[in-house]
Every structure is written in C-alpha cells, then in structure tokens.
Image 1 (cartoon, one colour):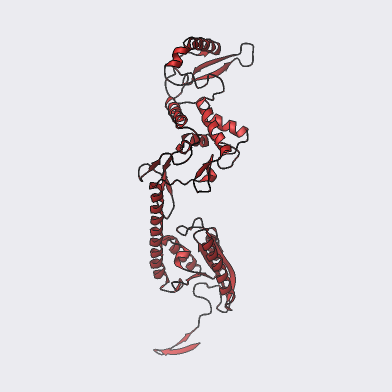
Image 2 (cartoon, helix red, strand yellow):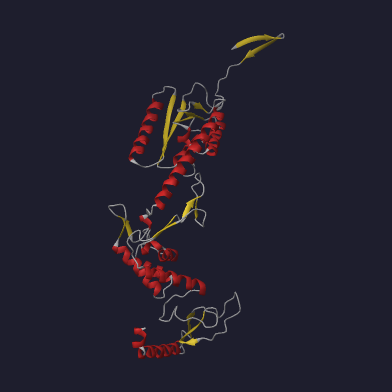
Length: 398
C-alpha cells in the first residue's frame, strides 16, 4: 500500500488481490493448466509426434510448482481447418467455460486451428472467461494486450498455409486421375478389393451378387424388389449392413466400374475450410478410363441395364415384377406399364386383371385403355409364342 498527495488531497493505492480476467481466482491460488495437442494424419511418424506432445505437456505442467495439471486434450488424425469435428478441442473449450481451466498451452497457432475465424472466436470466448492461451512457438499470450493482433496475423498465415497444402493435395489427386490411376473406397464397394499390387481385384463371392442384381433387374424386377429379396436372404450390403435400400441397388446398376471402366472426379471439394463436396456438374474436369481394372459384368450387360433404367424413367411408374407379365406389358395409349389387380379376392369370383397404371392417375386425365384379364393375356402369349416357334429358323438365321 502506498500514499501520495495531489493538490492537497491524499491518494491511497489499494493493490490488486485478484486476477485481471478471473475475478473469482485469487492470485495466491495455483493456476489450473491444460494443454492441447493435435496431429493431422494417422501415419506412424505423426503418431509418434502425437505421443511426444502428450508426454511433453504432461511433464511441463506437472513440474511447474505454480500450476495444477488438468489434462492434455488431444485430437489425432483430424484436420485443423475446422473445429466442428475436433471432439477433444470442443470438450476443452466447454471445460474452460465451465470454470475448470485457467490457462491452455499449445504448440502453435496452426496446431490450435488453421481457420482465422475459428481461432479468434475461441480465443475471445476464452478471454472473456479469463482463460488465457499460450502459443509456445510464436510466444503469444492471449491475455496480453498485443495478443489478439498477433493471433490475427498468425492465424491468417496459418490459414493461407492450409490453403496451399489443400491446393497441392488437389493437384496431386487430379494428376493421378489424369494418369488414369483409380482409387476406391473398398469398404463401401461390393465386388472388389485392393490387391497385393495396389490395384483393384475381384472378390468372386461378392461379384456373384453383383451379377445377380443385374440379372434380376434385366429380368424385370425393380430396384426395391431386388433390395427386398437380398434383405430376406441375409445378403450384406456394400457397407456391411443387413438391410438393402433401392438406392443402393440403383447405384450398383449405374456404376461404370462394374464393366471395368472408371469415371473419375464425380465430385469435388468446394471449400478447403468446410471440406464440403459437390457433385461435379461441369465445374471441374472429369476423366473416363476404359479398361482400368477387371470387369464383373460385360459391357453389353451394363449398357442393357442403362437402357432399361432410362426406359423405366421415361415411362414413369414402377412394377414389382411379382407375376410373369409384370414389367412386360406396355399401354398402347400412354406408354405406361400395365399392373396386375385382383378382383373379388375373397370370394368365388376371384380373378386377376391387368390395367394401365395411369388408369386413375390423379395428376392428369385418366388413361382410356381398358383392362385385360390374365386368361386373355396367357392365350395371346401362347399364340405369339407358337407363331415365333413356327418361324424360329428364320428368326435365328437373321
């Protein structure tokens, strides 16, 4: 305590007894200190770096008599460009805001975050709570008056570094594509695995399922009907699940990799910060590699499937292919499929008829085509088959 006289008035200074940014923490108490460590990949070299950081900060905090060790929060194998997916980083911020931490130590600004907005948001949030962050490499203390200016500058540099790395990775990826090198997410792809030489090789047990899907589809079954059949049989999906979806079947039917070709860069990353991917609709170049790997189905079968997919989309509606004539009768009036209906299903007058699926379409005028009884269709089919057999020599020689 000291006194001074100014203009005849006595001024007495009362010294501070609490911390500037945390009024509830007396100066005499030990600081509760935590550390944050992060590495960007899961390879062995980076894993060693990750373990070394955890060990370094644990010893550093415990050896300081003025500090109380809280925890080393660490994320491994996670990019620093965005904090949303960094579980332990977010947990550390939550603990600090809950009053469990007084100071955080980290290696550098780029280890903390490579996104300027995320860095400043976190630092300001912690500063308001009285929690400081020390960046060892840059020698920055966020509770210092110059801290925020330095943080802004260093974060911007780190963000540009991240942009440069992202652009280099993208360039390398596109160079591989341009050279025709195909990579695949094997864990979500049915029928292939990575061979000893790093190239795609067929898994015959799974390839049989792929061929069966194409056969069922070309035989008239719908993707939903195929999915239901595979689920009932207990066949695993490409992702290893037990329930098949129609969209999964459609994806298999339309993927050119099953005929041994590969269309590369179907999607691209819009923003290196958000990592958001978008379907490539001409914004980035694409590359089509013919014969890049062994085919599971022939090119002819694949093209037939594409024609059938387009035909069904054009005609609209769907067929369950539960009867021999499902998906094979087309309305001469509007081009839609005929579907089977059961009349008098619970009495002696039960009968099966086929009628246009747009007969009572609410979206437009009803189709004027009449229904046809199943018996009439069978008779017409037998007659047509007989005529074909009589002319089989001409047909097969054509």
